[in-house]
Image 1 (cartoon, rainbow, N blue to C red):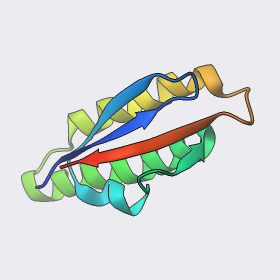
Image 2: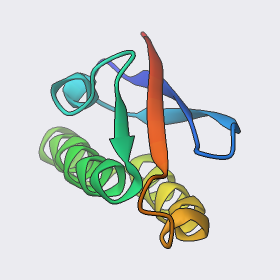
Image 3: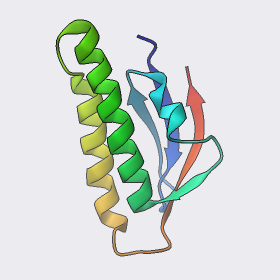
Image 4: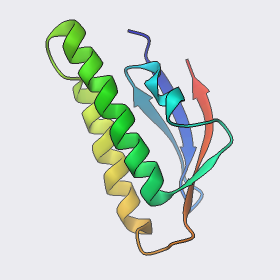
Length: 95
């Protein structure tokens, strides 16, 4: 499976390189766009779940790296949940 990274910038300016075991991320995010934190978490959850399901369909087990990445995103997003104006910027994709 083609894996990829997607580089994001959190509302506090912290940049993070995120992992996906599938190119499905490109169907949920656009380079250069920003998303409300809640929308970003929701899109990440849907995309990384699909990616993990694809790994499971091919190899017989879920992708723990995709699940770990989702947990990291959900955890980091908590710091911004009370700021309705907070946005996550999708900087770039790395194949």
